[in-house]
Length: 81
Image (tube, rainbow, N blue to C red; front, top):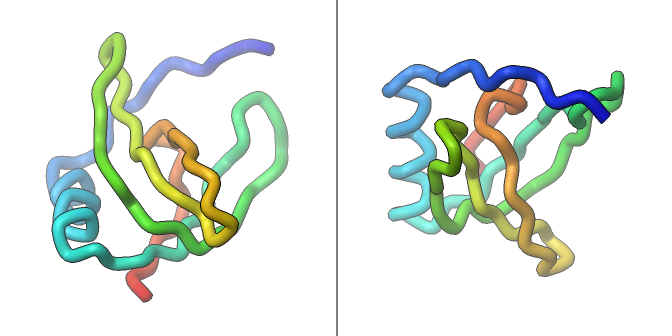
């Protein structure tokens, strides 16, 4: 499976995720699944942000309680709930 090169997101978008984490706000996210034409759409609770090897990730929990990491440049739509 080929990984695409990371495309940094804007500072304003990064700050949006930071604020959602601090305020314990749930989000509805739609994102591209790597190396496929699949788009996921889920309600999640953002927990933290991290940077690894120059890529930024959102650590989140879904409604089933599973914790996931999502590369920020894969997110296509986001809404506060």
